[in-house]
Length: 105
View 1 (spheres, rainbow, N blue to C red):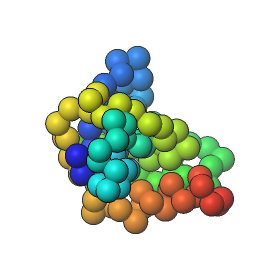
View 2 (view 1 turned 60 degrees about the vertical axis):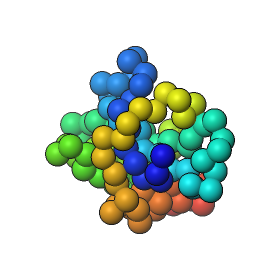
View 3 (view 1 turned 90 degrees about the horizontal axis):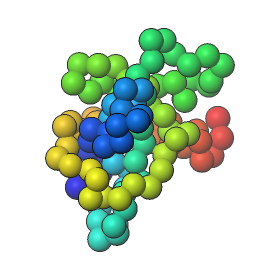
């Protein structure tokens, strides 16, 4: 598993709104049975009232999706199948959204 790889959301109940998950975890922690993931959210327009750093997008399979940094969670790595894409090229954007949650906007 590589940092910033994108996986299909394995949870059917949330898949329509959050079709993909980004693996945020450092490769140094690959031995752990879980991965820290950030959901990518499908919305018709930017969420209202949020600071710019929390409404950034990445493109996966031609679809522009919002980084749901405030909804990061640990997930068993066994649930993440083969990666469908990578957002490594958007590393700074992904980390900026995460930093907004951790450090403040």
